[in-house]
Length: 125
Image (cartoon, rainbow, N blue to C red; front, side, top):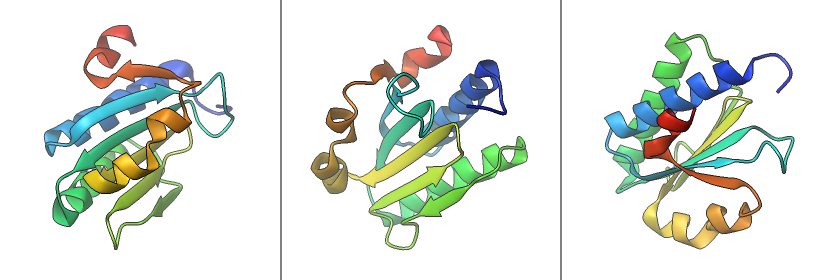
């Protein structure tokens, strides 16, 4: 997006993936939406197994990216923790419980974007 380089956006994305994996997030996926939306460059989608884990995933991402100087613009859904949205501007992180991830199926909704395996993102980026 306007104020940060593509290299910084990829660095931010890698940090977010690592923060999620550090707290054992399940099925972490990255969707490159830069060619199909002005909302962000990447969506990161993951899920946790319960409310406490979902909140821990959210806390860890917010802490790690905040320490690196990335500003959290908006956080939604933290209290209920069935779908937490963390908006860092250039990346938007969605952390679901299993049921809501299946129900909302963001991967299908954003299928025009490029699905990238989170494990290989670091290699590609």
